[in-house]
Image (cartoon, rainbow, N blue to C red; front, top):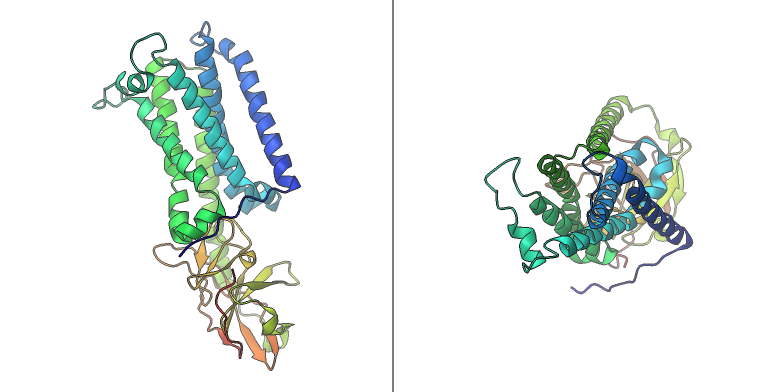
Length: 360
């Protein structure tokens, strides 16, 4: 099956976002080159090419840290959602900064030696049998390779071409890349003996990323437990009239706002109608703006998928979202506003509509 490539559509907010990020990168590099030589005794007298390498390297690490923090922060506070919306752009910029760091490293390695810089980068340290002496360059090369792949496949074309489960699994490797970057930095510090302030920045960054993800996971677990234990308080008189099912495009959803501020996405798949919470379990992405792919509701942000009838992600993934009951009376569709616990099976409502295939 072929997939049509559609160029990225920048809007005013995305252009503004990219300009701000690029300006901050430029400001950070300039500030680093100005301040870093005075950080520590080990940094004093360091050649400009080395400082330039470190400027782009540390900038890439901090950007990657921000990328990994945006998701948990958006789950705690919706004001971070605009950052989440533009996170792919930040990831591409991070890969570009990391590539610039690598280019300066290769330009510097054995610059005054007949040894090819690419060869020198790989063979200057062959202590692969050691722990502290292990070549830190290997971790950096691996991380850069992963970041380039993630940046190259960040477009929705690849989400469709690879299929959402494959794309999702591929992009989860950003955590492996982050671990490799941390190992790259840590071994570099240990082997150089430089104990400048960025050692503290690195430790704090790793701690913040870890704590935010643990806290977000704990919060999700508590909310799921509360939803599972709370429920059952709404009677049949509280059914909400929604619409004529014919107004819902096949493979798409109608998003409904409840009185409590929650949003519900009512999907039609052929003649079947199912309702899920509009918030993706991953990072609150708008499920109702996605579509049904291979029989699963697919989040438009990161490709997370859920079965319409029970809100469960297909194996081997374990995410779950809340489901809602629907009923049909003539040509009117009704919704029970009481959310079921995440993963609760609800038999789809069968309408007289016949599916014409998934929406494009």
